[in-house]
Length: 293
Image 1 (cartoon, one colour):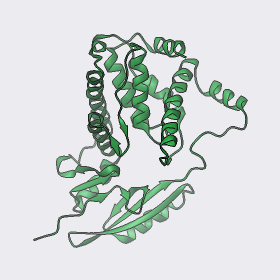
Image 2 (cartoon, rainbow, N blue to C red):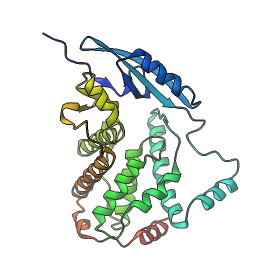
Image 3 (tube, rainbow, N blue to C red):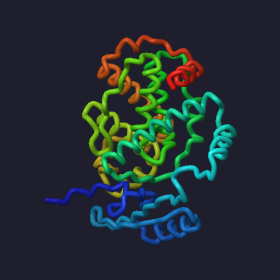
């Protein structure tokens, strides 16, 4: 009886803040890569060695260091000036909604006594790009799916990007029907069943979109499965690891999966009447957000 090939961990087993960056069957090659990365002052590294098929595989994990997860300002005037300089009036209104959603998640975690860790800087500057990418004036479910998908792909928050994205979808759908209420989703590690499949599929797709070339090497070295946080696994035998258009392909896959999720959310919320509603544009959405304050 032969041992099954190990599952490749995409986050370091001893510290999941570190993400797999490089893999090789040559220890010297890994050392050279580590030396190259050490020239970047904001990169911290961790290593691991594994035996696969009688061969030692050398893994290199990294994490990006940052001074603070959130923008730092000394006065309220500086905050106002930064927002006025960086964002249009319409984008600011949607940004304020995103920040409010995120603050609500933090407050909930504090009330529960739960830990909240940040793994990257907050990149609010990415959100206007998300909004510009959305094709407004389609059917409401299609606009909602694009808003959700592009937000998650941009990953602008220091954590809870899926929950924040779903919260933004909730605000969008509620702007068309004040009676709409997104069913409770649960949270990381305790997602409710109706949303869990979307979250896990989304994270698998994100991994394939961002790391397929690395996974191709892993497959060549004998790994058959990879695993990321929350125990989410990807079977490499079911993936075309030779795909060269992985960024665009999995971007489209993510949007398709988001469309399915929006349909599920409308069914769960008994709001299928919104499926035939036509979006009336970004400016109208902004006006509705402003009117709801």
